[in-house]
Image (cartoon, rainbow, N blue to C red; front, top):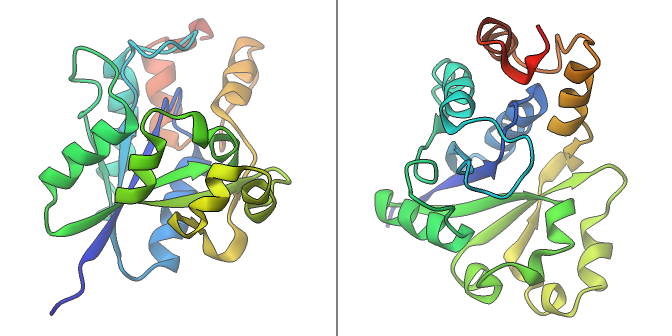
Length: 204
């Protein structure tokens, strides 16, 4: 029987999308031969997060970059809904959309620390594998040891090879924009010019 290919789901606010987001996705494709695609899923603007740009802009910025990489896709599965979906709902919908693939979910260690408090966390780890990106000086194994739920379900969490780390956040970039500082090379050129052309974040 032919082995099923994986699809890695990368959720987030992408406010704005950064080079580091796409770099992580590219590294995942490089490191895991069995991963067919990375799907970026921007959260709905109904998500309770201050300063979140409209769905349209965040989707468009992602699409500008994903359209140039055959391994990347952007999905509107959350932003087209009339409410913010829970992660388990999003993954189940994507599983129906891609029945011949195994769906896995990408999170950073910042979210791993609070994962046990997520809606339907037990169902999430029973149905899907979780790819973990270490952030800053975090260590996945140490975080898991300190949390009873994570420890009980440790086999559901996969530490990304090559110790791929992400230290720059979208909030860091937004802060630079607010202070009228350059964000060139922190975001793809497509995103940089889209922000400039559409006068986003009220900085240009």
